[in-house]
Length: 303
Image 1 (spheres, rainbow, N blue to C red):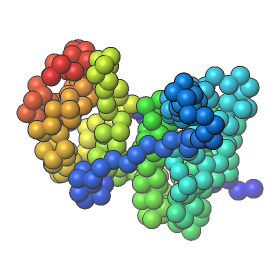
Image 2 (cartoon, helix red, strand yellow; image 1 turned 60 degrees about the horizontal axis):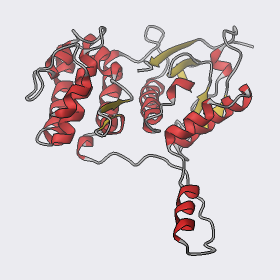
Image 3 (cartoon, rainbow, N blue to C red; image 1 turned 45 degrees about the horizontal axis):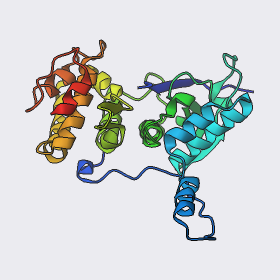
């Protein structure tokens, strides 16, 4: 059998025009089972509400992580990935032996014409990875793989964000075809995918709990800062302009959203790999920012 060459892109375990004007989607949740009413006693009503309350996403993930049987645990993770991505995607269980010497283009399943097939491999170290495979005749096909790190307790949107980035990059590569001297997406493609993910998923992946004064951040959007640092002057300028428009429309003037932005940017500045990043420094010049590295993000909950 002739093996196909593969190359890959990854999303660190950590757009459409006008996307920042739209509301974020609702999270996926279980459908509650409602027991038939048998008596209208206050105590019974209270018990019924407790018994029929659906599990939160965090509880479902915690439940999957606690499964003792290794095979059942992997299947539970794969089912959660499928639930997060929804009916538009088919999640294929491809968890193999860790470290096995294999051709990934033959092992994983191609994403298909509409990008509907996603591989799940619990042994995949990165949260998300795509293998690009040479099909011959200048054609290329991609295999999108999500690992167990693609699941986050904050919600299914984290999984959706990782998948969206990989799908966008894969679609661009497949449309271009196989080029021997460029076997991965270029930096501009990575920057555009990261920017689209930031604009669409910021409000889903950055939040806080005022009762416990706890920031809740699923992603720093590391790939956005990494791609920005490698970008040319024009790409940097257009990226910053998009973020600035997002900030002016969705953040500025709203106390709650300003808190979100501050705790997120503070978390970025506290990351030793990002604290001197040119995009992070530029965002810190926005009105109401001027943050100092090393400060606990929870301090901003008193804004």
